[in-house]
Amino acid sequence: MLSPADSPSLPIRETEERAWRYWFSDGLATLVAGFTCLLIAWFLLLNGHKPATPFSIGVTFVLLGMYFVFLLRQRQIVEWLKSRITYPRTGYVRTPYFGEDESQSLDLTVLSMGGADATREQEWKRVHEDRKRRAVLAIVLSAGAMIALLLIRNPWICALTGAALSAALWIGARKDQRLSWIVLAGFPFLGVYLTIFRYGNAPGPDRAAYFLAGAGILFVAEGAVTLIRYLRKNPRPRENEA
Amino acid sequence: MSGNGIRDLTSLDRVIHEPARLMIMTVLYAVEEADFVYLQRECGLTQGNLSSHLTKLEEASYLTITKTFKGKYPLTVCKLTRKGAEAFRAYSEKMRLVTGGLSVANQNK
Image (cartoon, rainbow over all chains, first blue to last red; front, side, top):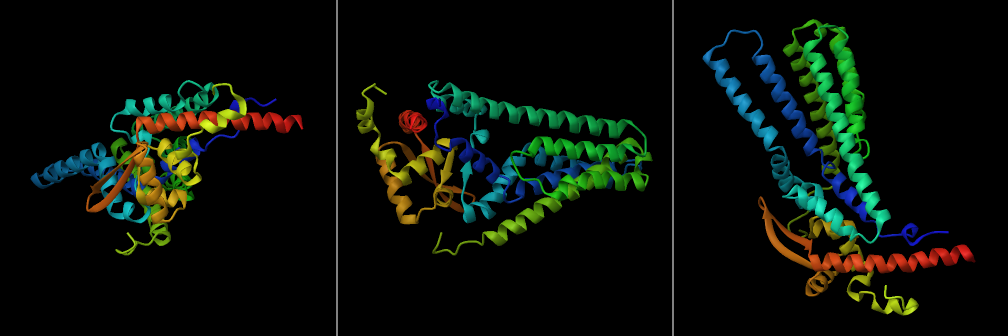
């Protein structure tokens, strides 16, 4: 026998997930992540083994400043780009995850259930905990792979890092956003490429820099393809339509 | 539900019960806030239709409509009020009990 909790209900979770995926639908977040990776790679390569000159020190500071701006203000940069590209075309939405106060999103989840329907409340909690667990697992796997890349001097370390990062991205994002083959196949390919051309024997920071540069190119490519597709699908509305 | 059986259906919130407004409320309940264009795309409503339903929901104090700017782009941002969220929750609960009863009836047939 079916209980009331098993009966058809309003598609709240699906709507919330659609809003979450909408954040990635234009590729801008991926593009910005790609540029951040390229900045770090450039910074690491510049600070390699070359003798410091006033020019190189100046460039290093500029890059470091840009890197911190990108890292700390990543969401604001994406929002700024979206306000010019995405919102006029397909509209603006803010999911509970991007609330001004993080506790607010938690309150919303709890409030939205009202304590009356335990099954739905458990389902919501399960989804949020699953998302958090996957994110933590992906971060730990990525950090481990990058530390191994920095410390272990072996030709095959690049290939292993590529495979590990591909797995981490798949674990972290498989349910939330559609990952294209550019990223999923690109990371193992990048690792094998660096292994074949013996970048694995380079000093630790250089290995990491080459890898990050490759990762940045992959993310930029992925973001650019997604953005082009989005722009083709959603041309800018004329003034009188807006 | 108060336990009056079928008569409880008369206490359903008619402001929310209209399909277009139910769609709008569902979207706004699931997200923190959304603008006019997003709601229009999600719900598949015309500008005039959406506008009139939003006005009705605003009159019932179920949502707030704020005209703002994101960069140079003007936004009409809609957000559910606490009263709106509570009304939606109560409506959802009543409907779930009704459709739950329907599922049981279908199984017994």
